[in-house]
Image 1: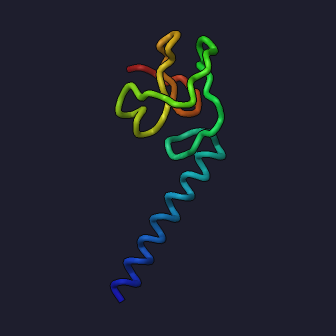
Image 2: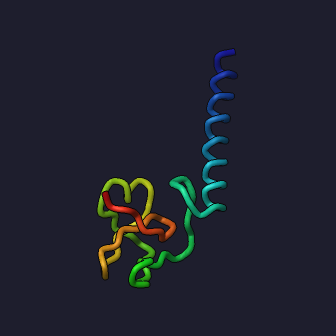
Length: 84
């Protein structure tokens, strides 16, 4: 009985994660999606390389990068991030 409950909980959690990825990918926003298109800097128009080098932990975990040309930080969708 415990194994069945455990399997049900695991399948439920994986399903929720998959739904989050699908929704974020379709909306092209949020942290959970997968971006397969080329990212362009919103300030200077420079194309980001396909192989990225994360500058911080947030970029390593959730994607995005820093423009080599103008130092603009963007998320994985190419939207500029506000610096606080």
